[in-house]
Image 1 (tube, rainbow, N blue to C red):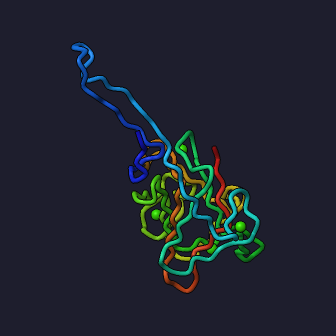
Image 2: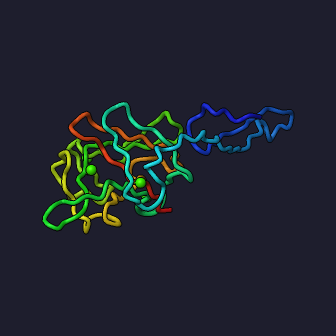
Image 3: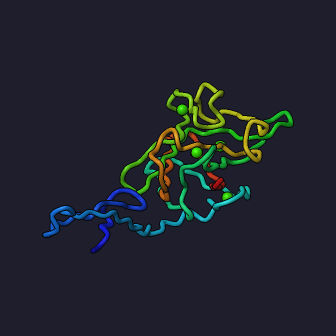
Length: 189
Ligand SMILES: [Ca+2]
Ligand SMILES: [Ca+2]
Ligand SMILES: [Ca+2]
Ligand SMILES: [Ca+2]
């Protein structure tokens, strides 16, 4: 028996069923699961997995940036991962981030994508710690006191995705004057 790597889902599960000559156990069925190994797509070196280190990647324009994180982002209690924007001087002695237009998606299989954060669509991202900020304009200043570890956007994926593991991330920027900035991704469980 082989596991079809084209199947969606991670891990993949299914049922094996076969007929036989035992009258009260035909068809005989049992459940199987397997793991579809993810071929890693390393993020650009500036995007580290863990705490922000002030080295950041600038995503200027489409096409989107796709990479994998290991271990996978997964559903679970509370916020699931952190997207660290570039820590910036907001002026007047204040620090935080200047949030660029960006869409953040995750996927289990690099095929079906779920949008877990979208700054710029005008719809509050109620699954994040930025639900109370508007309007969703480019370079929107958010003070560090409202962020996780000074520059982190907390994201809860459970309201959006089926329970499971999501190793793939996709960031889409706009083609404006500057791009979306990504310092680090931190997994919270
Ligand atoms: Ca969660
Ligand atoms: Ca920024
Ligand atoms: Ca939004
Ligand atoms: Ca970094």
